[in-house]
Length: 213
Ligand code: Z5A
Image 1 (cartoon, rainbow, N blue to C red):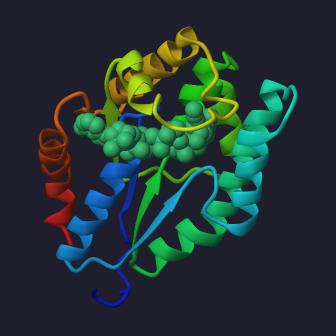
Image 2 (cartoon, rainbow, N blue to C red; image 1 turned 90 degrees about the horizontal axis):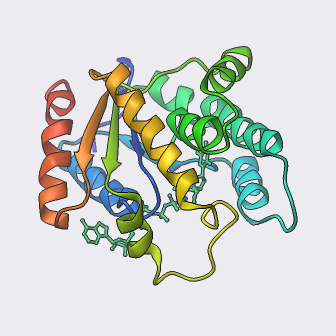
């Protein structure tokens, strides 16, 4: 991989509901970045820092009830740590950052899924100084039930995975609305086809950015 340089790196996020293939396609994008000699950091939310990973465990696996607002604050706290300690430093060094979920996830899950309101999520992040926007968001999209079916073979669901179909439908609609509002940033990928066809679409969406490297 090339060494870090003084030009600011690019920030790429992967978004979408459960089972759409974020983890699978993250590995594919990492391979593409390496093939283009791009120095990058691969990371995820919630998590991405030692404290963020502890917060992830709390928010996904705490027993008993958790207030929706508490869930939002834990996601946001993880993001504040992540931006300050991982994302911004890497981008400043010229490294690219590939992140499995970011602010769009809070808008979809807490803003729409939990019905806390999208403006509240945006205002909270602005208040916390999290104003960075991805250069490209790959939104993997497919019908909710099909994504959940892909996940059915996995073990115990976490707190959020136990949510209702209506919750995930609201989250999906909010993701698609984000894409409509920011078509230059968000590329919607049909994730329902074969892995090969999805990866072709992912590669096509990445190409303009890769050409700038
Ligand atoms: N959350 C939130 O509420 N608010 C926030 O701000 C943030 C997150 C940041 C953790 O996310 C939870 O946190 C998540 C949202 C919430 N909650 N839930 N529920 P996560 O990203 O760690 O977990 P996840 O969304 O549940 O991801 P996942 O379970 O790992 O799914 P995935 O990464 O999208 O899918 P995958 O593991 O790549 O693929 C799933 C299976 O499908 C696997 O067997 C693959 O081999 C298969 N697959 C993948 N692509 C294909 C195709 N094209 N065809 C056939 N089979 C395929």
